[in-house]
Amino acid sequence: MKLEPVPCCEGQLIQRAKRGESVAFELISKLYRPTLNQVAMRIVRNADDANDAVQETMVKAFRAIKDFDPNRPLKPWLCRICANVSIDMVRSRKHESDPLDQHEYMLCDGSESLSSQAEDSIAKELVVEAIGRLPVKYRQIIFLRHFRHMDVNEIADELKAPEGTIKSWLFRARGLLKRDLQMALG
Image 1 (tube, rainbow, N blue to C red):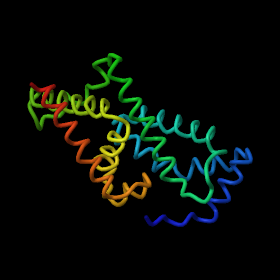
Image 2: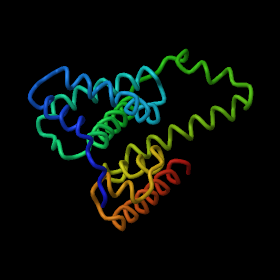
Image 3: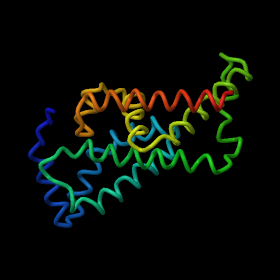
Image 4: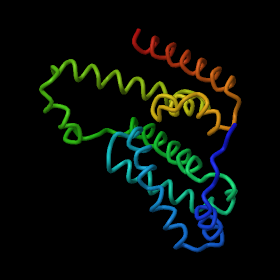
Protein backbone atom coordinates (compact mmCIF):
# COMPACT_ATOMS: atom_id res chain seq x y z
CA MET A 1 0.00 0.00 0.00
CA LYS A 2 1.51 3.25 -1.11
CA LEU A 3 0.77 6.26 1.06
CA GLU A 4 0.97 9.81 -0.20
CA PRO A 5 3.69 11.84 1.48
CA VAL A 6 2.36 14.30 4.01
CA PRO A 7 3.09 17.89 2.91
CA CYS A 8 5.44 19.52 5.39
CA CYS A 9 3.15 22.49 6.03
CA GLU A 10 0.26 20.10 6.78
CA GLY A 11 2.38 18.23 9.31
CA GLN A 12 3.34 21.51 10.95
CA LEU A 13 -0.29 22.61 11.10
CA ILE A 14 -1.23 19.29 12.69
CA GLN A 15 1.52 19.63 15.30
CA ARG A 16 0.41 23.18 16.11
CA ALA A 17 -3.25 22.12 16.29
CA LYS A 18 -2.28 19.24 18.62
CA ARG A 19 -0.73 21.85 20.93
CA GLY A 20 -4.07 23.64 21.01
CA GLU A 21 -3.39 26.48 18.56
CA SER A 22 -6.84 27.31 17.23
CA VAL A 23 -5.41 29.33 14.32
CA ALA A 24 -3.66 26.22 13.00
CA PHE A 25 -6.90 24.23 13.16
CA GLU A 26 -8.76 27.06 11.41
CA LEU A 27 -6.22 26.86 8.58
CA ILE A 28 -6.74 23.10 8.37
CA SER A 29 -10.49 23.70 8.29
CA LYS A 30 -10.23 26.23 5.45
CA LEU A 31 -7.92 23.94 3.51
CA TYR A 32 -10.19 20.88 3.60
CA ARG A 33 -13.68 22.43 3.83
CA PRO A 34 -14.33 22.29 0.04
CA THR A 35 -13.39 18.60 -0.13
CA LEU A 36 -15.46 17.76 2.93
CA ASN A 37 -18.41 19.69 1.52
CA GLN A 38 -18.25 17.55 -1.65
CA VAL A 39 -18.18 14.35 0.42
CA ALA A 40 -21.16 15.50 2.49
CA MET A 41 -23.17 16.68 -0.55
CA ARG A 42 -22.83 13.28 -2.24
CA ILE A 43 -24.40 11.66 0.77
CA VAL A 44 -26.93 14.12 2.22
CA ARG A 45 -27.92 15.78 -1.11
CA ASN A 46 -28.77 19.08 0.61
CA ALA A 47 -26.51 22.13 0.93
CA ASP A 48 -27.67 23.08 4.43
CA ASP A 49 -27.25 19.52 5.73
CA ALA A 50 -23.86 19.27 4.01
CA ASN A 51 -22.70 22.45 5.76
CA ASP A 52 -23.96 21.05 9.08
CA ALA A 53 -22.13 17.77 8.42
CA VAL A 54 -18.88 19.59 7.63
CA GLN A 55 -19.22 21.71 10.76
CA GLU A 56 -19.82 18.62 12.91
CA THR A 57 -16.86 16.92 11.20
CA MET A 58 -14.59 19.80 12.12
CA VAL A 59 -15.80 19.76 15.73
CA LYS A 60 -15.14 16.00 15.98
CA ALA A 61 -11.75 16.38 14.31
CA PHE A 62 -10.81 19.24 16.65
CA ARG A 63 -11.63 17.08 19.66
CA ALA A 64 -9.67 14.12 18.28
CA ILE A 65 -6.67 15.90 16.73
CA LYS A 66 -4.54 15.23 19.82
CA ASP A 67 -4.64 11.50 19.01
CA PHE A 68 -3.94 11.95 15.28
CA ASP A 69 -0.55 10.77 13.94
CA PRO A 70 1.00 13.80 12.15
CA ASN A 71 2.96 11.46 9.86
CA ARG A 72 -0.29 10.27 8.27
CA PRO A 73 -2.21 12.22 5.62
CA LEU A 74 -5.01 14.27 7.14
CA LYS A 75 -7.43 14.29 4.19
CA PRO A 76 -8.54 10.61 4.35
CA TRP A 77 -9.05 10.88 8.10
CA LEU A 78 -11.22 13.98 7.74
CA CYS A 79 -13.14 12.46 4.81
CA ARG A 80 -13.88 9.32 6.84
CA ILE A 81 -15.22 11.40 9.74
CA CYS A 82 -17.34 13.47 7.33
CA ALA A 83 -18.73 10.38 5.61
CA ASN A 84 -19.73 8.82 8.92
CA VAL A 85 -21.36 12.06 10.12
CA SER A 86 -23.23 12.41 6.81
CA ILE A 87 -24.45 8.81 6.83
CA ASP A 88 -25.69 9.29 10.39
CA MET A 89 -27.57 12.42 9.25
CA VAL A 90 -29.26 10.51 6.42
CA ARG A 91 -30.16 7.71 8.78
CA SER A 92 -31.68 10.09 11.34
CA ARG A 93 -33.52 11.96 8.57
CA LYS A 94 -35.68 8.95 7.77
CA HIS A 95 -37.19 9.22 11.27
CA GLU A 96 -38.19 12.84 10.75
CA SER A 97 -41.00 14.05 8.56
CA ASP A 98 -39.84 16.58 5.97
CA PRO A 99 -42.14 19.42 4.94
CA LEU A 100 -43.26 19.23 1.32
CA ASP A 101 -41.83 22.65 0.40
CA GLN A 102 -38.27 21.31 0.84
CA HIS A 103 -38.95 18.95 -2.07
CA GLU A 104 -40.85 21.40 -4.25
CA TYR A 105 -38.01 21.56 -6.78
CA MET A 106 -38.75 17.95 -7.78
CA LEU A 107 -42.23 18.91 -8.97
CA CYS A 108 -40.93 21.59 -11.37
CA ASP A 109 -38.88 19.30 -13.61
CA GLY A 110 -40.93 18.67 -16.74
CA SER A 111 -38.55 16.09 -18.22
CA GLU A 112 -40.22 13.16 -16.47
CA SER A 113 -43.75 12.41 -15.45
CA LEU A 114 -44.71 13.01 -11.85
CA SER A 115 -45.32 9.30 -11.25
CA SER A 116 -41.90 8.43 -12.68
CA GLN A 117 -40.26 11.00 -10.40
CA ALA A 118 -42.15 9.60 -7.43
CA GLU A 119 -41.04 6.04 -8.27
CA ASP A 120 -37.41 7.19 -8.62
CA SER A 121 -37.60 9.03 -5.30
CA ILE A 122 -39.03 5.97 -3.53
CA ALA A 123 -36.39 3.71 -5.09
CA LYS A 124 -33.58 6.06 -4.00
CA GLU A 125 -34.98 6.18 -0.48
CA LEU A 126 -35.15 2.37 -0.35
CA VAL A 127 -31.52 2.12 -1.48
CA VAL A 128 -30.35 4.70 1.10
CA GLU A 129 -32.27 2.86 3.83
CA ALA A 130 -30.82 -0.49 2.73
CA ILE A 131 -27.29 0.97 2.78
CA GLY A 132 -27.99 2.31 6.27
CA ARG A 133 -28.86 -1.21 7.45
CA LEU A 134 -25.55 -2.67 6.29
CA PRO A 135 -22.83 -3.39 8.85
CA VAL A 136 -20.44 -0.43 9.18
CA LYS A 137 -17.56 -1.93 7.19
CA TYR A 138 -19.84 -2.84 4.28
CA ARG A 139 -21.61 0.53 4.38
CA GLN A 140 -18.23 2.25 4.25
CA ILE A 141 -17.09 0.11 1.30
CA ILE A 142 -20.28 0.91 -0.65
CA PHE A 143 -19.89 4.61 0.10
CA LEU A 144 -16.26 4.73 -1.00
CA ARG A 145 -16.86 2.70 -4.18
CA HIS A 146 -20.18 4.07 -5.36
CA PHE A 147 -20.40 7.57 -3.90
CA ARG A 148 -16.75 8.64 -3.90
CA HIS A 149 -16.05 6.54 -7.03
CA MET A 150 -12.82 5.09 -5.63
CA ASP A 151 -11.08 2.07 -7.14
CA VAL A 152 -10.51 -1.04 -5.06
CA ASN A 153 -6.82 -0.20 -4.59
CA GLU A 154 -7.69 3.32 -3.40
CA ILE A 155 -10.19 1.89 -0.92
CA ALA A 156 -7.57 -0.59 0.27
CA ASP A 157 -5.13 2.28 0.86
CA GLU A 158 -7.72 4.35 2.71
CA LEU A 159 -8.90 1.48 4.92
CA LYS A 160 -5.42 -0.04 5.27
CA ALA A 161 -6.69 -3.46 4.22
CA PRO A 162 -5.54 -5.87 1.48
CA GLU A 163 -7.18 -5.46 -1.92
CA GLY A 164 -8.51 -9.03 -1.78
CA THR A 165 -10.28 -8.26 1.49
CA ILE A 166 -11.80 -5.11 -0.02
CA LYS A 167 -13.03 -7.08 -3.06
CA SER A 168 -14.55 -9.69 -0.78
CA TRP A 169 -16.26 -7.08 1.41
CA LEU A 170 -17.57 -5.26 -1.67
CA PHE A 171 -18.98 -8.52 -3.07
CA ARG A 172 -20.66 -9.34 0.26
CA ALA A 173 -21.98 -5.78 0.67
CA ARG A 174 -23.54 -5.84 -2.78
CA GLY A 175 -25.06 -9.25 -2.07
CA LEU A 176 -26.57 -8.03 1.19
CA LEU A 177 -27.94 -4.94 -0.55
CA LYS A 178 -29.43 -7.02 -3.36
CA ARG A 179 -31.11 -9.40 -0.93
CA ASP A 180 -32.40 -6.51 1.23
CA LEU A 181 -33.80 -4.64 -1.78
CA GLN A 182 -35.42 -7.78 -3.22
CA MET A 183 -37.22 -8.31 0.09
CA ALA A 184 -38.25 -4.64 0.24
CA LEU A 185 -39.56 -4.61 -3.31
CA GLY A 186 -41.27 -7.96 -2.97
